[in-house]
Amino acid sequence: MQIGMIGLGKMGANMARRLMADGHECVGYDVSPENVKNLSQYGADTAASLSELIQKLTGPRVIWCMVPAGEITENLIAELSELVDENDIIIDGGNSLYKDDVRRAGLLAEKNIRYVDVGTSGGVWGVERGYCLMIGGDKATVDYLNPVFQTLAPGKGEIEATPGRENMQSTAEDGYLHCGPAGSGHFVKMIHNGIEYGMMMAYAEGFDILRNANSKELPEELQFDLDLKDIAEVWRRGSVVGSWLLDLTAISLAEDPELEGYSGHVADSGEGRWTVQAAIDEAVPANVLTAALFARFRSRQGNTFAEKMLSAMRKQFGGHVEKK
Image 1 (cartoon, one colour):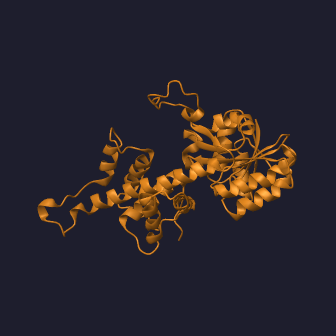
Image 2 (tube, one colour):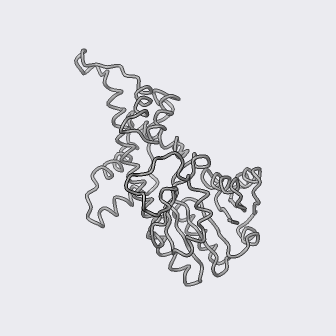
Image 3 (spheres, one colour):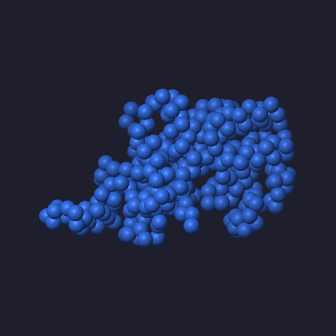
């Protein structure tokens, strides 16, 4: 398929590269000329403006927006809505609030412009590993975009099939899923990121306890000088707590055992807050996810090894660099 990719940063450029490697035609645009130049080196057609990108795409146009959530995404989609034609498709692959998707889809539908929200997980590793995609939108449009989703998703790979799913027909096993109408894709991604906060916090606190096992406040016979990088490595192999986050933790500790390159200032990109708000709206207790979110707030007032661990994991999976 032909697809326009707007936003050629850490995620967008890699997604365009993965699409092109599988035979799709990409036209890229970014406000940064350097980002545009970098993608062109991989064979992509590029545009110097939104209007030029629109002109280079044939109808029905497919335009994937991969820019920061919030005002930037809002303004971009509003501008695109004045440039595209009826039946064109605008995809928001960022981390927008699902309520914004529902509103945008309604406004664009009045102009007969189709809208799809795609929660995208995979970080800077996705160009090789593929991206887990959580999709919201009407079925006909999502089905039309299936070749794009098939390429971006990781596929079945070497992951064993889940017992009991033998007769279930779903793309979930390929790493992408049509979750429901507009907004549902980002809703599922929001909860995904809320869970991620909790998992990261559990690893971070655990490694902080391991690191302080040699505290002089403990009886001498109960003091242990533990090698955290080796513990992370052994847990990767056969342990029930094994995960990709643990893989990234092991990388971080191998590179910097004391995490001296991190201050421990842990940012949050919004989804954790929205997850807690959704729990409040639904009257669902979310003790772990709420505590993990508040721990990130606390990290900005003084830092522990656990918070350095969180910051290290964020850099590994998403290329998130601490603010100075």
